[in-house]
Image (tube, rainbow, N blue to C red; front, top):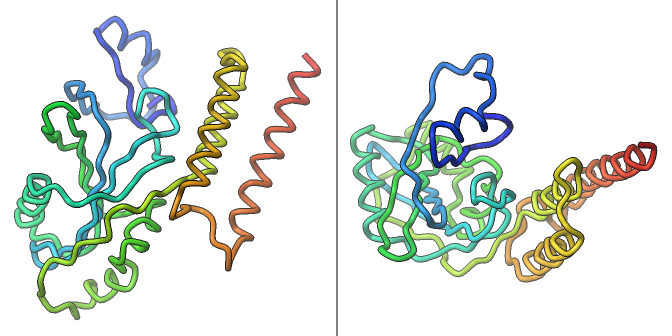
Length: 236
């Protein structure tokens, strides 16, 4: 909505201001009480309603300052028993067979978990569960063919830091853009933060030393758009 995955408002008046006009094709809204805390992704595979593989990741930073948006910095962690039980209950109720990603918001003070969604696609974060050893790609095909035998729950490797540097640099570009350009100090801080995240990461979402061209192509497009933005502003 309005180019965002979610919008956060404190009142009906703020909602009306933020929304503007009702988006074309939007049939309804999902409204949830605000919860402060990081988002946790549970990547999983299930067979006939039983979890067979699981990896939990805590998102420490996104490409939006309010914590919505897409993850640019995160870390795999030991799966929380309560969230694992919630996910198992959902999978059982759906008789779920396949791979997926369930998302929760977690209160850092109480540890309470608040369910956001369950999605049958892992999308751009596929590299995270793969690096953690889940092998969801080949497994999804086996599940679709009915070839997977039930076994003990496999837990992915915790402690892996990951980064999405392309999204991080896109965030820097948005900070630079008018009419709401951030201060130079904020922009420089964002660049340093992005570099620090990239250098510490064990996993990169869009970079592979053995196959660098897709990432270089993406960065080339970003740099071209950045040069065009600077040139356009120079003409105004």
